[in-house]
Amino acid sequence: MKKKFSFGDFALNILKCFAYFITWYGISNVVVALYQICFRQFTGTNDLDAINNAYQSNAVALTIIANCLTIFIFIFAYKKKGISLFERTSLKRTNILTGVHSALFGMAFLLVINLLLILLAKVAPESWFTAHNEQNMSLTTANSTIRFLAVALIAPLTEEILFRGLIASALERSLPRWVAIILSSLIFGFVHGTIISLIYATILGIFMCWLYFKTGSLLSSILFHMGFNVVSYFLTGESISLFLVGLCILVVIYEIIYFNRYKG
Image 1 (cartoon, helix red, strand yellow):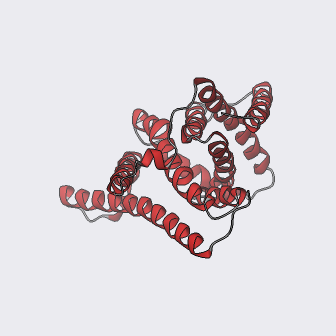
Image 2 (spheres, one colour):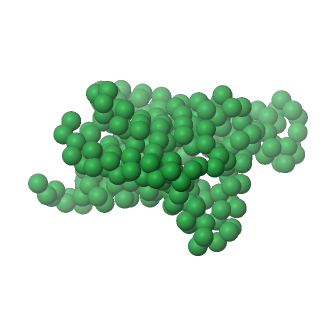
Image 3 (tube, helix red, strand yellow):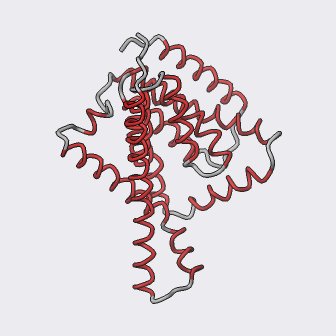
C-alpha cells in the first residue's frame, strides 16, 4: 500500500533523525574534549602536538566510550517515554539460520568491496586513497584487543542502532523505503570521513539497510556488519586470491537471492 505523504510527519521524522545524529556526534566530541582537558591537567602541558598525539593514540578507546554512552542515553531517553530502545529499533531475536546467512553475507561482502576498491584505484585520484590510508593508519596505533572490541562489537552495534534502527526507520515512516535506504546510507557514508570511505560505506549501508527491512530484525544487519568488520580486521594488508574473491562474489549473489525471497 502506497504511503500518504504528510509534510508534518516528514518534518517531524527529519528532526528526529537530526536529533539522533547530533546526540551521537555531540557525545563523541564531548568525550574527546574532556579527554584533552584531563590530559592537560594531569600532564601540565599545552603543547597542541602532544595533546593531538595523545588523542590519536587513544582515539579508538575514546570512540568505544562515546558509543557506549550514546547507547545508554538512547536507552534512558526511550525508557522515560515508556518504550524499549531495542523494541523501537526492532533489535529482536532471529532464527539461527537467518543469523548465519547474515554473518556470511557480511563476511563475503568485504572481499567484494575490496575488489571494488582495487578497480576504483585505477580511475580515482591517488589523493583519495592517500587520505583513506592515512585514516586507517591512525586506527592501527590502538591496542589490538581494544581495536578488535571496537571493530567487531561496539561499532556494529552502535552504528546499526543509530543509522538503521533509528534514522532509516524514521525516514521510512514518511518516505518510500528505497529513498529511506539511500538517504540513511549516504549519511552513514559521510560520517566515515574520506571520499573512499564515503563510497564503500554508502554501498555497505544500502545492503545492511535492505537486509534490516527485509528481515524485520536489526540483529540481521548487526551480524552482517560484524561479519564484514571481523574479516576486514584480520585481512588488513593481506593479499587475496582471485579464487577466493570469485567465491565471495558467488556467496554475495546467493545471499541476495536468499534474502530477496525471505519470508521470516
